[in-house]
Amino acid sequence: MGTTDVLVIGGGPAGLATAIAARLKGLRVVVVDSRIPPLDKPCGEGLLPEAVESLSCLGICLDSVCALPFVGIRFSDEHSSSVAKFASRTAFGMRRTALHATLVARAAELGVTLRWGARVSDLSFCGAFIDGGFLRCSWIVGADGQHSAVREFARLGGRRPHRFRFGFRRHYAVAPWSDIVEVHWAEKSQLIVTPISPGEICVTLFSSDSRLRIDRALDRFPAVAEHLRNLTPTSTETGAITSLSRARAVARRNIALVGDASCTVDGIAGQGLSLAFRQALALADALAAGDLSAYVSAHRRLTRVPIRMSRLLLLMNASVALRSRILRVFARHPALFSKMISIHIGQPAPVEARGLLGVGWRALRT
Ligand SMILES: Cc1cc2nc3c(=O)[nH]c(=O)nc-3n(C[C@H](O)[C@H](O)[C@H](O)COP(=O)(O)OP(=O)(O)OC[C@H]3O[C@@H](n4cnc5c(N)ncnc54)[C@H](O)[C@@H]3O)c2cc1C
Image (cartoon, rainbow, N blue to C red; front, side, top):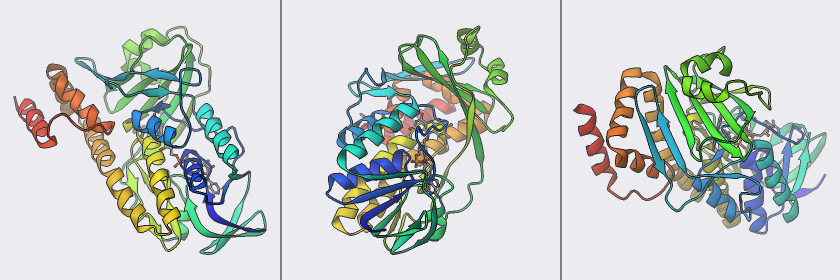
């Protein structure tokens, strides 16, 4: 069946970004995915500035023709509300299928071989049987999502996440009422509203209850319910499991994991795509250098802040008292919220993180 330098298993955002980055380094790349495009997945559909900047390193420049810019994030509950703006950096809301099509087009333009609907029946360190034929390769990249089979094959599986949550997503045809992403907090659930086009928004619900759906949850979010009253959804509601978990290690011999296969942060953080794209760029550097150890340390560095941020957000989800206290502190000290969001989006914090923690801690105690 042939040979290639890099075999990427999984043609989602992480796999395609890795394929593009590796191709830009001159490597021959084959991507296989068991599904056939257009590939969709429940997602908040927000691309934070780091995701947008990484895409531009891959030669994909988002603009307001293909996506809708948003300028910041709001956290609110029934008592408090705080907004942080991104200063000069750009973020976009974009339909997941449109993002996937854009990545596919770029990969094809660069000469990546794309094999959709392909079945990987057996894997070894020197290649894989794909639809019955053997493809020999130098490197294997597991980009096959949070239930990664490549991770299991390479014995890189991590500890089972102790807490799963569920994310449900639906679109509505309406002119966005805001140019920021809204994160509404209620008891052990959050509703996120992302503007994704001049005539459409994406609504995502996160909770620990697998039976809770957006319509029923709207009772907890009266401000959003008011906006959605009498609107007809433009997509069916789809859901996915979300969790905070990571692989025991992200590389073994000639196999590397990228994206959700390597580490998932709870969807509420909105950072999965940023992380996947940044990991892809670091992985391509390592593949081109023929040494995965640089990727291992880059991966550790890239995931540190998102994991901490997810833990904080999950803590706020778990305790109503803590959440309302933190949101009240943010509302009283808007600069504190802005600094937290700066750290969240990878912007150098204007004050030392320790100083920031001190301000937050004093405010929480008062
Ligand atoms: C509800 C929800 C909302 C979210 N919102 C946001 C957000 O707003 N912003 C953000 O940045 N992130 C968000 N995320 C996270 C983001 O969606 C993920 O981090 C991202 O999809 C990871 O991409 P991936 O390519 O690693 O995995 P996936 O998107 O899961 O892609 C994996 C691919 O591998 C393929 N595959 C699997 N097994 C095999 C196999 N054996 N052989 C071949 N192919 C295989 C699958 O078909 C799939 O195409 C959200 C997540 C959830 C659950």
